[in-house]
Image (cartoon, rainbow, N blue to C red; front, side):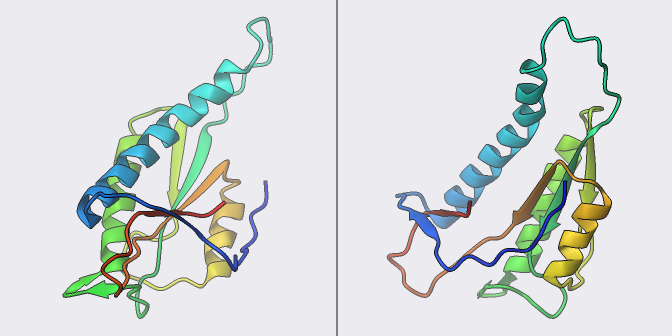
Length: 150
């Protein structure tokens, strides 16, 4: 499976009445549930009488958005790059408890990576899933909700 970087010109905003911190936690919890159950769903679709047994682990690349000289959105003294890195490390720690999952990080420290470098890491790892974590903010106080790109 190969990954390429695609820039989308449009986003989908899902309106929510949650506070920004609750929105981040809700997104974080949903992401963890999806990542943990996704391999189970794949295995459930395998015929029971199948004699092919795969010893290959399900490889997930976790990408903490921004980093280094690119702080992402800054609110007060908090940078998006720092939140994204903390979230990715927590998700990775939870996923690493599953022996059938291999976690690969695009970065584990505060360093900048170009988009093509992030895609290259996923390709070299032969990733089954690539998850890039970002935390948006807006000057418009009425803007609320999660942003999901497909």
